[in-house]
Length: 445
Image (cartoon, rainbow, N blue to C red; front, side):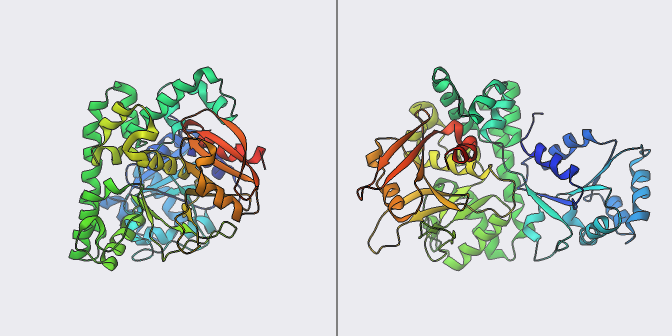
């Protein structure tokens, strides 16, 4: 068990006098239950109830009175209530719509009780079969482990502060690049990270990835609406991994005969399960950030480790030795997008990239990041600054003067100039420093 960054967010929630019951959201096996069990150590009383068990479900559904329910829960758990704070964790809450409705009453009638709810299939049935009490709950998103969390897990905690402060001595640059390449190969699924930490054997991880993929495939029948959707979702889970980081067409996706409507519905279900995201482009370099849903999206999956295993590209990591050369650069873009996702615990935060709106233009910036009322362009590329043509075109269309290049080189800030003679600052950010991006931007705003 290793520390996760979300634990600090949970502490802020627990200490907030205006807190509401928390719904912890995330894909299956990203560590929701483990995180709550670890966090429970900060409370004098901990009630953990899994609604997959019929007796627990019947107990919650036996009353609408949460004040009467609380002592019954202590009796059910065979726990004597101590003085101090109480944390109630309701796992697999999607199995009881009645219990979902009770969350508002915990907020209104028992505000002193800390309540966290989660469910492995909760995402796929929200809004269609279950509605969370509007204004009576709050949300937090849990993602696969970030590189910072990976460093903590493998015993390299000494690098955390220098990375966050953008003050890592150059002598450690190659070491951190190698560690990041290993993280990119393994990915951030907690079980894979934990297994690697204990055994340091990459071959032992095959069973972990295979088990996770089979679990996702077995879930299909539980959230697909019809037989056609079952078939399309299964096809995407079988063949879609090789399209990670690519701009895709929904109609005939992956050489299939499926129509755009069928594929789009299947992708949306997998997005609800938080297994992937269809990332749409912006066509403006200025706020607000408005996704152009008429243009083709990029496909990013939940986790690079699963992509590498399912797409059978792990050997390339070892042979190439440079993340930028692996899988024609798609591996680099997948892991960069994945790291950006971990910068926020907010639910519903979408990623974007940028394409130039001008007819006939092929300009495209890999990723776009919202910061302090600005759209920050991010390219995932090596090479000379003058070769970042699309990024230069973006900078000509925006009103600010800062851009980011993620690469395997060292950290630094260059002064660059577009063909239109606009001067801007280019932050050269090593992959292993992506977690420091918000602080770096803040210091240079």
